Length: 457
Ligand SMILES: Cc1cc2nc3c(=O)[nH]c(=O)nc-3n(C[C@H](O)[C@H](O)[C@H](O)COP(=O)(O)OP(=O)(O)OC[C@H]3O[C@@H](n4cnc5c(N)ncnc54)[C@H](O)[C@@H]3O)c2cc1C
Image 1: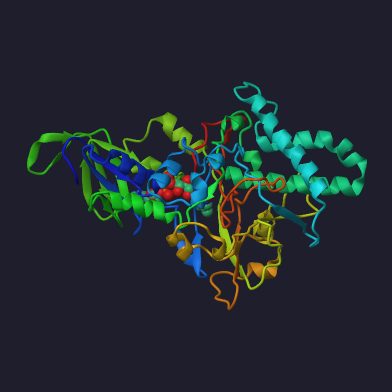
Image 2: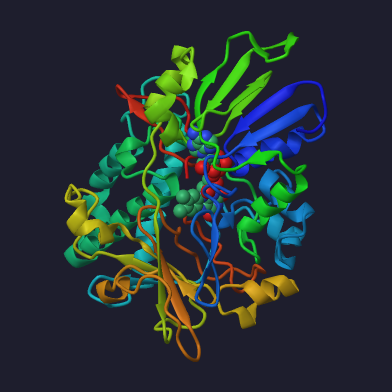
């Protein structure tokens, strides 16, 4: 450990733990305990095809001076030149940067862009109207999903000028919008996201950007900045005693209130402990993990907060089936409606939760630094419609030009792109959200919102 003074133990070497360690550098002594054999947690870049693929986080959302991840990445020189452009940092994309897209129906046809746009405009107007309930003691519905569906039901009679086919299409697009919003909010259903605090979420300005050398380059850089020996890997923490008086053998003079015990029996005494383990771990273990248990208010928050599954599937194509300018391929199940209950049999219908693909461009279109050129991913796309292609998992080395695809299963790229805006951005950067920092769903407890969400994935 470095320095003297206060002794701090941080648990978990994901970006939160690494960030905390970076802030504390030079202030007392610090030990970072990580259960896995590597740092980064849900940030994990892996080689794929002849490029890189992000297993976890991919984008910096809202990359502008108010965003600490952006500031760190910029300071370390890990971003491409477009991220440094002030005009890109000022874009008010509302979390949904525009990108050229095409929407396919489940029949395989490209859907009428005007009809798709109209349905989306209705959906986003409804979402925007949720802000009116912020702070409300009696919102009309407990959840965003119930509210939006009730409003859609009210609109149905006048929808699409009353034409049945057009109305069905609009409902199908609205169902796809709801699924996309699930991805963005990190929830299985918008019925699990509380209406009242939904409007609290604020998007930072900035056109979402990616790391040319992979998101893990940030974790690696943070790690390499710490004095050697600060981080201990394969050190899963079992319990944290946090209101005691502990002494080290042979040193009776110094008393520590915190005792951290690991699964392998190692013990670390500290003045302070910083916990950055995921919410899922806390849900399962908090009662025994903390001794004494956490105050009821905190335990209640852990119980009430929720989150959904966030997976990605990577697919690789020999030849693109999409047009070169298309960056987002969206899919709509034409027989779906937000007014009908979705199938509860996820094993049989999970792929219907996929909402589209983000196309990543070939490295030859990259304009980033040399390292990025060397390591940038080959064309990647997110795709869900074609079951045969979904079986193309993992790596497949192909001759000539490569095409890869990847899909997010429960949280996906985002949204509807207006026509290509004259924004400058990197060719490869999808700029849409597989994940959105709005983070986990806010639990709805007894018809009322629980504590505000913590980002989960
Ligand atoms: C598929 C996916 C896509 C995402 N996309 C984006 C994106 O594009 N942009 C974005 O901003 N965010 C994205 N996210 C979210 C982002 O990855 C997370 O919010 C962020 O990485 C969380 O960091 P963290 O340090 O809080 O937690 P984690 O990264 O989960 O780190 C927690 C660490 O604690 C360790 N740990 C757990 N238990 C113990 C224990 N008992 N003892 C010691 N160590 C322990 C874990 O091994 C882990 O290393 C995505 C997440 C996923 C899963």
